[in-house]
Figure 1: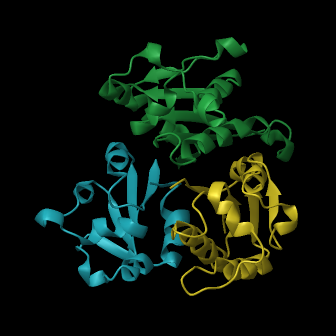
Figure 2: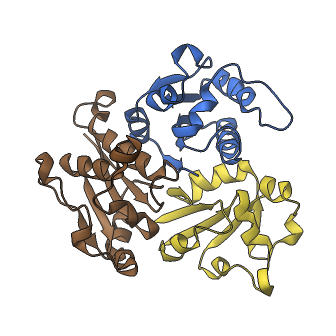
Figure 3: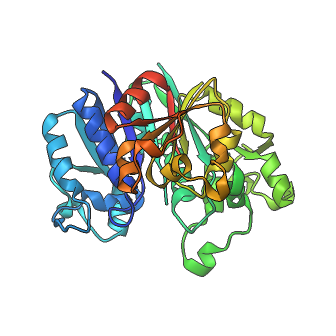
Length: 120
Length: 137
Length: 98
């Protein structure tokens, strides 16, 4: 089994690219791989607690909650990106951590595969 | 002791999205990654500008003056100050008619010695072949 | 290198992919990239399909946009997220998103 490190920039609402990344992470973990998941830029909104479910919007947090339970999924949000958007450590969804960008590079160091889904 | 080489390939125009700026800041973060790694292990970035991305490399960017934010120019200069390898695609510069004197080629004013390099696309392809992981921004 | 490329857009990215060279190249159409695998704009298939590569399209994104595998040319394989994971770990050593 391998390790996939993903970096993701697109926002929570308005693009399905973030959904792609979460569904890919879910599929990888289901197959027994481990996934390190890094969000920067607008994707940091994915790490905010208190998201509500509406039919017009994705409800990715539910998948994340299940992924955290597996123990094979780690997720980290860019601290500066989050603070710049006005949400703070106390706003973080359970399971997430916040670090600077070197966390992502450190995870990439021993990853078998790295996928960066850059900005839109 | 091991080195993981990572390619940061920037193809996006500046400022409309965060892509090019975040590519630079992620590459620069390689300088502090050691806190997470074993002694001697390191991440070695190479930053390549291709396609429309070469327009990030023009000097005299005045975003600090007009928007009060750090310019991509300053991020490129900081990366050169930190001795990152920075490559610009010659064919794409030629396509836009951009000459070397219009480009950010060094960080001399910050005390840096490393220079950016203008190279044919074939050299950038070689870099992409040689890295462990490749990322496009 | 063995390179897997996710193409996520219909209008952009072809110039980048056009220049890429790899010993083994896989192109996986996702998001709006699926239109490259399904449309024949002006009567012609997308030029990217002329590239020497193995082509895949993500079924979930294909069907989300009103198409099915029946709309695909014979050289394009419909794959699921689970299949994509296998492609990433078994077939391609570097993967990029365009």
